[in-house]
Structure formats: C-alpha cells, structure tokens
Figure 1: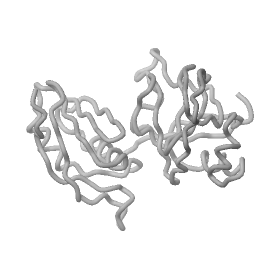
Figure 2: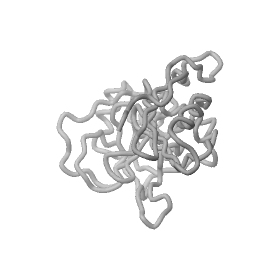
Figure 3: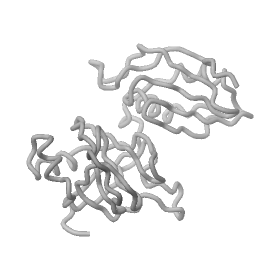
Length: 234
C-alpha cells in the first residue's frame, strides 16, 4: 500500500510559541494513509500533537470515528462510507490547532495521592526543590493525558507549569506496584497494574486506571484533563 502523502499544508507551531496564545500556521501537515480506514498525521513536537488533537476534537469532522495520539503522531480513524483519505486530508488542513485546555470540556479528573514514594527525595533534589516544593509543583497545575501506551490505562500526562525533565532510573525495578504515581522526562503517570518500570516513584493512589466495567475502560484517555490532589492516607 502506498504511503505517499494524501495531503500537505499548514499546521501550527507550539501552542505556547505565539504572542496571542493562539497557534500559528507555520509548518506543513504530513498526512499519509494508514490502512483502509485511517490516516496518520506526523508532527514535529508533542505540543503540535496536543494542539491538533484539541482542534480535531472541537471541529468534529464528518466521518471521523476516533483519534489516537502518540508522541509525534495523530492517527485519525474514519468511516469509509462517509469520507476518504483525500477528502479527509483536505479537511484536516482547515482545522485550527487549539491549546488543549480550550477544547476540553467538563471538570478535570481528580487523582488522590499519598506522596511517600521511594524516589520523592531524589527527584526533589534533582529539581532543586524541597520535598514539599515538589509536591506543590505536582499538585499545583493542570495535567492533560497526551497519549496512552506501555500498558492498558497507562497515560502519559503533561502539565501546564513546565516540565522538570526527570531522568528515568538507571536500572528499572522488576516490580512497580499498581497505583504508583511516577515521573519521567516531561511526563507524569500512574501505573495501572503491577509491572516492571523505570520511572521515578513519588507517590501512590487507589484510582483505578483501567477497568473493563467502564466505557471507555481507561480513566485517562488522551485529551483528558486531571489534577493530582494530596491526601494523608488512602
């Protein structure tokens, strides 16, 4: 199957990179077929991914059935009885990228956290913060689920207060308990189940990140806003 672009055109730069706070159309949008009912949009940065996803969610393009984001991509699934790759590619160019908070609706999901993780002090020292300062940084901002991966319900979340660029552990733990609240690179996440992992653990929660009794099963699908709230006990 051909992977030649079905459409190219302007797309935003980082949503934080303009004086007006509105994304500017300064880059080419690379749209390629992905199977019989999807196109894949490749973008330069995660900020661009989040802005385009937010714009697509607000635009509600005819025939689009699902948006699946990655670190540098947006997979746009569609109903082939309602649209096609060429038509959809053209419509994608007209979508206005938006800062994610402008497109989000409803109250953020609340994640209660006990901040007693084994790596809390080490991460605070890396960031030049006190233990309490790190907790205040983590709880004092609005987070957005950028994309999901690694395990069902594992959401890579970005904050609006700037990243600390936390390094991963040099050696992964063989077992990380379910509900562990962790940091790595520019992301925060909660381990949905017990698994190996190399992220820095700063706390724990009883929030259920993945449940087949829920629709959707993921508590934090891409685009979901959330806040971490400190609690004394679970």
